[in-house]
Image 1: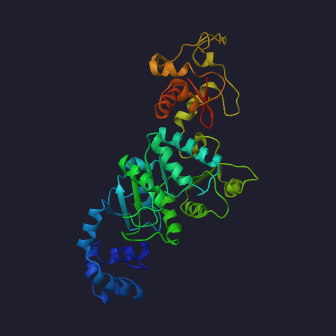
Image 2: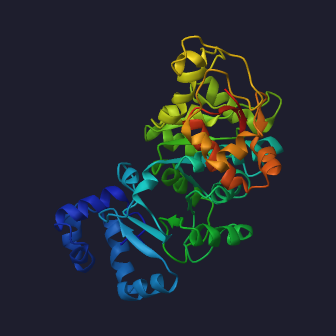
Image 3: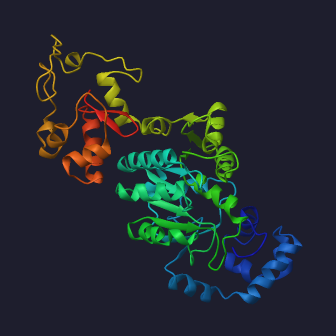
Length: 387
């Protein structure tokens, strides 16, 4: 039924209501019964023509041969947030694994031709989201989308790619290896389009409503006014989802859309905490400024926070403050080794990986734990320092 032209979400609901939820009855029903369900003549004709050409059992065999599952909006695995969207696809094709934790997700989208700044900020923010357990959803396009998927995977996170074509092909071809990696590492490729659907231009604006509809909010890292990203923004606004934007140079065409959206009320993002606060995942982030200061840089006395009434602040060689008892977690050898390379000057995570000789995914995990324990601060955009 999902392959019938003109048979969208509203008409699917009419059929389900009329036939008691049994669409097999609808598939076999005479035309007069389909009209009695409230379906117009043109769509009724398309249903009749379709069932003369399509064998449901053969379709299931085709799906199985491609490793693709067909999820209806009644299935448990169908994304819960997407079900809330008025025009949610009745059938969602999936290759890979969808998980209940994917509800904690953010869409990351942008231009297909990002600047070096766009590539870097996309990678850093997606890494930060991944190490905090936030799934990243994007569209597998060249540019920002591909960088978002790759950075998330590199950080050990989950990512979902929403395609504008059937899942028997990958578009663009340049991202075929990335698509295979997404599936192999526990993520998923999803599409509302049946097997054999080509990546027509008209498919992508519709595809974008799924990207925004699956998530808590949409992050645009870099996009021009003519970017297809604006369709994702329109859908997100219609779906009452959050819009996050990274600011860019006023002289850069690649940041025209993001800068305008910020001016019109989108949430300005300078670091990952700006996203986490808005989607209600800021508990760990807020522990740090509560103990050591606020976002304006006004520091409280760390001695007072740890019960040291004298509040001594004389620094000793290892970077701790006299009179302050470090957290027992500092006895962890891996965390202690990392702390030796962090001082009161912000240091980028790449430099910490180089200094310690550890993989960046391991460094990200250690930094997250140290942040939660109040032993390091994030100075913004993947830079870390002592409190």
